[in-house]
Image 1: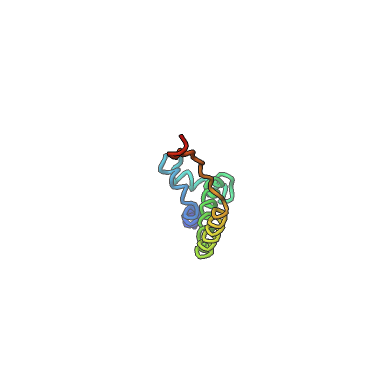
Image 2: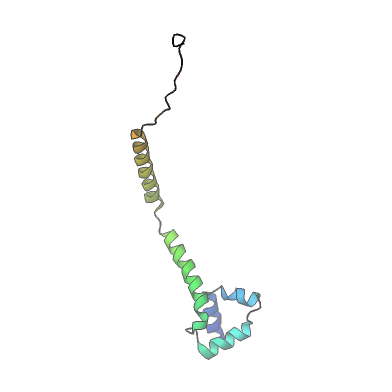
Length: 102
């Protein structure tokens, strides 16, 4: 039964597969570590943390209301347009000579 538990646990942290591919661990080593120390050992923390960070980011992105975001940008654009209407653009005054200024 422990092998099934290990497989289920490994599926929750897919980044551990990269460690096996890189040759840092074998599946046998990881399994033995799992059996000896369990899934709450600090050895698994870096792999769980990277998974939690990614999951957290995905949750944030999924919960973004695109309509509200679009309306916010439209509001900001209106404010910027209004402010730019008040800003007087100083054009450099050029001294042009007329025929009678000689």
